[in-house]
Image (cartoon, rainbow, N blue to C red; front, top):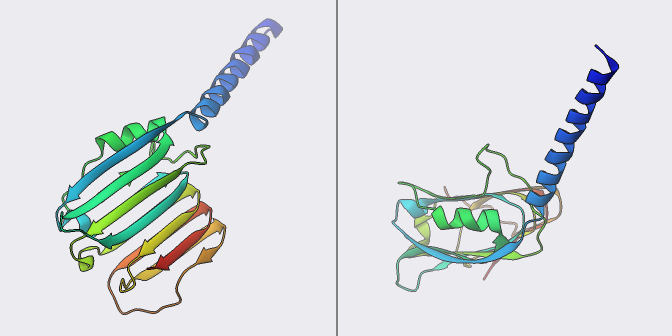
Amino acid sequence: MSTVKRKKIIVVLVGCILAVVVYIFCYMNENAREVQKEWVLSDREVSKIEVKGLSQRLDLCVKKSDGRGNRVSIKGNMPESFADKIESLEPQKDSFVIDMMTSWGVSIAKNTKDILNITICLEDQELLKQLTVRSNKGDVNLTVPEEFQAKYELSTSYGEIKAPKEQTDTKREVSIELGSGDITVQKE
């Protein structure tokens, strides 16, 4: 192979690598947009709630409904690509998944200091059988009613876990798994 062809190949490869780096940088540092949306869920839809692919602080609250049915509401600022996904979310037959993963099934961390608030209002707290949060980065603060009983599976690769030290005999599972960030579970 001639020296000229090798130089052309190297220039093309360097150009492609540079284009990928610029794309990823722009994707990770996109602008934030305010979101505020609420869904009314059936008893079956509210039985399993999953949040996956976030990369920002999440304040999650489970509480008794005010008589307006089972609801999940989201409020706060999010990167634009995540906010776009919120608009198209719909409950499944027996679950509600708040999925911020890419179409390739990966979760790319975004650079944001914004806080996202998700509130789960339940007509009967026994309806919620499984609550799962899987996030790249960002603290997760979960607030539940005083009488809320669950088996907690909490893990973070880089951060601290603060949760009530209780052993319960219940089938309800709460799982929070973070790449980095603190996990706090509190009852009120």
